[in-house]
Picture: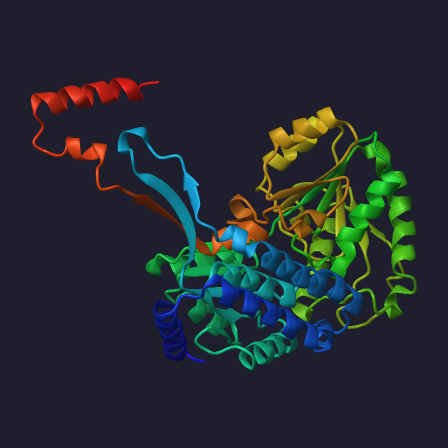
Length: 468
């Protein structure tokens, strides 16, 4: 599909929206339809994701993509009527007897650009929010995971009218054209580098954007916390999808005295999680050869600059895009793996002795998409929350804050802008429209020109009444 055809598709969707914006009943019906489509094609989606990666744990796709997506649809359907209600607010006293309220309305036709690492969830989850808010939508799954992109395209386009919801697939050139369309809102999930290009492409049309990006999400361990428990929960979050998760712990900060215990615990955990790892179909592969080479380049750079790399399982296996988990000690800020998001099964350990040093290090770098802190002391936890800024936080675990439907998910600064999931996703794809309803008799009528002496006195009195 070329840019002219994309423009035509968008114009048809926008025209259909203007003719008949989706009401709540229509939205609920189509959320149910989407849920049924996903359920009926669950195996096709799982197998397509497996094909994209070469090997990708089918259990992970079910647990981390299909299940959260279906639960998000359930949550939206349960709450949509409440979210969409007109909300009355207290009016300004000097505008009495008027009433004031707001209501959420769909924006029009929105664009959604998915991401390859969790193609099903990151393409269809924003669609749930867009449908709930009353929009039409055009989807563009990532071309880096073509098998799942094509299945999503087929199941969407065969079940929804083109002028309501449609999916297009193509290469980076199509993605470029897609991001430059005059959507009523554009939603992108991907890297910070590409996010900048998306924002630049949307700017000439003044298209509002939501950018769900990434970054280096730290896991900070206090020396009083159980090293074994912290290691298990960090590695669980780290090794889902072989580290190719936007909120995976990117590096660990902890006192040097914990190094030996942490290393031994992590070795035991990896062996327990993934026995016979080279033949284990629950351990995913790296998405492609370019990404695989990039990860090896990060390791080589770190080793040349003095890092100690610890293999956590048998590294003698030579298979396409197969990378074993690794710890990296003796890291410093000059190493490339401490400067860019890793997105793989490599976990650097940065030794800092106090929570204050850890917070200073985090604050001196780009704001992360997620932050993980392991500590049972409430006072220290609250201090850390007060003195850091990140997209989201999980205390004493990793990644699971994103599964909380009643919490917003989104980055800050270089890790993104805007939120989605649940009510926050509904708001992202809506216009919160302000309405004031004036009565036949209104006090404000006395303030129309000309401004007589009486009206000047009235304005003076009003000024005194409004002063704090």
